[in-house]
Image 1: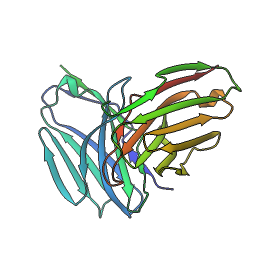
Image 2: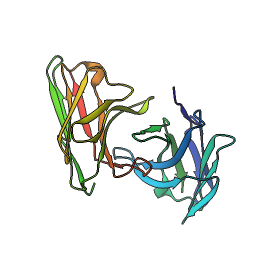
Image 3: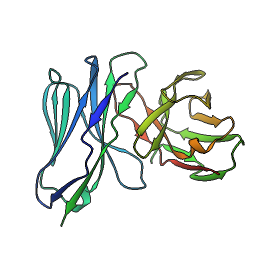
Length: 112
Length: 112
């Protein structure tokens, strides 16, 4: 059973702070990693993908991957109230018709 | 979402009736997926398709069937709806398995 675990949350940070969201996965064959943002009542939206160890930055977002420790994280710098949403970690094991396995998500609240 | 539409957006149905949800894409993507999202469970894969007439089961496929007779349409059928199938259903598409998915807007289904 492939498992993707996220901190139960919710997570609350003040505006302007760094929000750190963590995710661990069980299958060492995992190859592709994604972070989705989902606003209440809306569909998930892809915000970051990462495939190799290290950091990947995109604007205020940084994804970090450590395959040896089997974790992937998302840092949101200068957090804004508009970042308040549920963040889903998703992992894919290599294979021809592989599918994404999602964590249960963590809800982030950014306090003005 | 651009290129992928789900219908209907909302539906209330009675226990024991068949229900079909439709996912339509204009992106000509090979891969299509049906997920359900429930509080405490996150996104769980029901069925997926890797081409016309090529489908396979996900982790929660009991009570559901799918069909894909054209690239652009992926239908999810609840053969005899039960209250446990009350959920939000999301369709997702991608052109490559190691790319992230694009999600439709979702269908909120209530079985009474």
